Length: 114
Length: 202
Image (cartoon, rainbow over all chains, first blue to last red; front, side, top):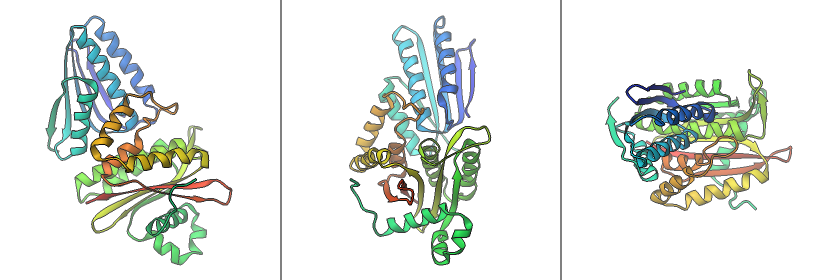
């Protein structure tokens, strides 16, 4: 199960760890609602992804969250997304590039060494 | 209307997985095949695929396949997808400790000089398996770039009613960077045993 640290004062939302839940909707539906609620009155949001592993079911929820952020950006909100991945994990690197294409959001790719 | 007939190595793999699915007493009476089934095996498991077991198997993969971190990550990602397919879609089901119905199946990881072979097997019906086989053939016909594009499209589609991403096999092929091999054999109860297998180069 991933860890979520969402600070509604700074607008910084960190999702990290491993996400291979069987029922991803139970975990991510409240998170998406939380983000939506926050964005009703916010001017900016910062999303930081540090997921070592995530299953394809989770991958759809990540795209959903990025879609919410893109809509917020279209409406004048400020969005910053950083995505950390292990430097050798070229599959993850390619996947993040595909998320950039899929979401049309600017995502800062942050390779790091274990 | 299966498009491919298992042959060669694939038959060997099916035998391995079927043997692993049988109980130990039956294994004892098939010594020759037992030796074959255990050759090069890193991890094998047959039984219920629920979240507790998935966690134990995940720890087993990370603890056993330690020589190449990049390859271990690939094996782990493939495990996530194929194990959850068994959990959600296997015809053979048992209740877990919480009373939830979970799939039963078999998982096998073998190591060879140049690659790991990751295989899973589970019971299914012919009606269920035909679209999966067609999907495998479709995936295997695509270049890597086309496959990434296909994944992007599928990711934008609604999730399946079981919560699955419906893109697990695409992810498996992209991660393994090798074709998806599959095989289907008829069981005594007139259902089918479906195996899916990929090689992960070292």
